[in-house]
Image 1 (cartoon, rainbow, N blue to C red):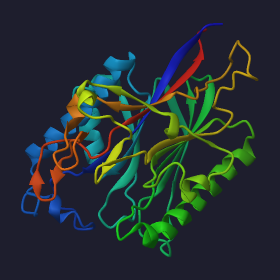
Image 2: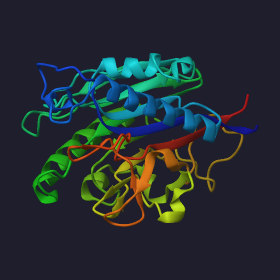
Image 3: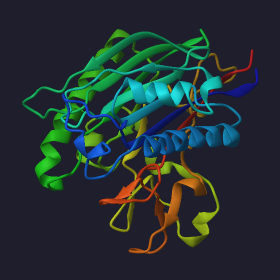
Image 4: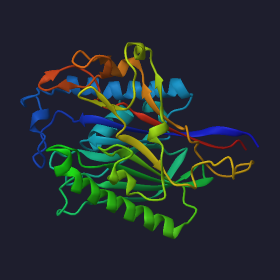
Length: 327
């Protein structure tokens, strides 16, 4: 039985994907026309269309649209609806999973999915206790892939290092423990569960917080970079660049049952699976610019301080390739 690329899973921190309207319930005032960033509807549409263009470039690169797209720093359902229905990807038929979280700025984790390929059968939003921080929720979606196999998806955006790595460490460890608790409950219900955690972990794959997810495999250390030609001006070694250093804080972490072990597994494959080199950092030239401060190149973000740059995000999207049998 021949194997095929069954679906793509994509994750992207789209960095402050706000509409231009003031929400009285969140601290989003800076992303309004009268706010300090002068965030207008025209600028929103440019960012929205840039996200859609990137998803189209993924389709051009791999031959298929991502079936599942986990996202971070999304303001609300409206901005996702705008992306799914009012851009060049409208024909892909993306549906939305989102809920407003307790985050003070109103940025959330969310998911787009193509219902013809991935059909959700269970959705949960796990709220972080106030004792840890008022922060974005953990999103859990259990779904059927082509009515053939079950895939458990968890989308996370762990607390940042704002205020210092040491000061924020306890917050990330606490959210890591909640993530581990969710994973354990899934695996206790199904020992063969095929599970992928995707997200911005705000820490390296080798950190204690990420390592707290025992018995799973982190795909980020072996991820290769694919995309454009700007890399000739400087090597891309991660999905995010901070003060001249590339970081691999955007990660896929998978259960052993999803990871193909060629020493044990035999064809024909009757389930979905990924390979050890199956994670890629997607870096088309469109998302990059020269790094004048630290040399090389870097992601082209929307703002640098108060200065509008017109880019999309300070993060590059990451891709996980999942395979299966060709019936």
